[in-house]
Length: 377
Image (cartoon, rainbow, N blue to C red):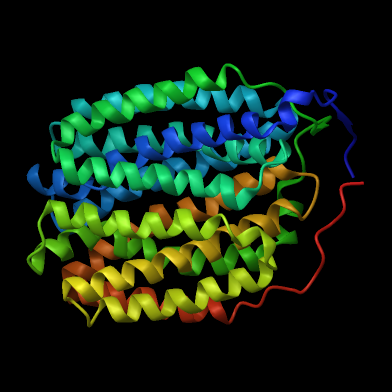
């Protein structure tokens, strides 16, 4: 085991509920900024003349940049500390959101979304690990992210103007940066050199692989989902509303999950994911879509919180584990949109839904070893 030492004694304010609420507020603002920029990016790509495959390239550029950025930043944060990455990540992300206003061609949109992914990769994993080390309930902390997605989706539905949404993303992310200036150092292990990345990855590889398979299918679906909804007659208001239903459910469910076994929670997230992606391919009425959005909200809540708790409780290298977890999600965000665009080009939007369901079934066969989380003592 690498040498480590506690970098600072715990101060009373760090353990206060009000301080943890402040950390949750940063998650809310960052999630709002991310979602209000995300929903209509495929439609912006289409307006700029992008094909379904090129829309997939836009999503892939974002996911690839996020992948490598979060992996590297999480790994280095175990050595250099969290706050450096939290603050600089939020500041750079706010600039990147504003830069989206310069996307006047498909190529420019691909580049600027890559920059956004690079910036968010610096901030997101470090912020999650910082919240965990502050003693935050991770289900409740994650629910603030879903609440941000709710308001981001609502803003998308009500505003509709993509450029104005980009401005809102910039302002809310900048607010998150200013709040982070009040953050204090918390008790954590400072490694004499960055941890062994391969060791941490191998420790929970089953979790990462199961998450990868499920989220790969989901990422393929989400990149074409707005186009699919338009093709069955829904307008921008309904697109934003359906996304909002998903996130309202996530906000309510995530707050209750930490009381349950993280392994069982993770398993049920996989089961429900299979059900919902199969149903997407066949049910198109507005009522059925609302019901499916409720189910997908429960599914993602269980899968995300369950997997996050497994990897963060697995050892001392929490920044590295969190970085690998975020990188797993964003590897899916890189490859999934490409697959979604290709499958939609050849087999239509319903083919993407069936592909996602098949991957979820594959993920269920990846068993998670029944072990107790490693002690930090």
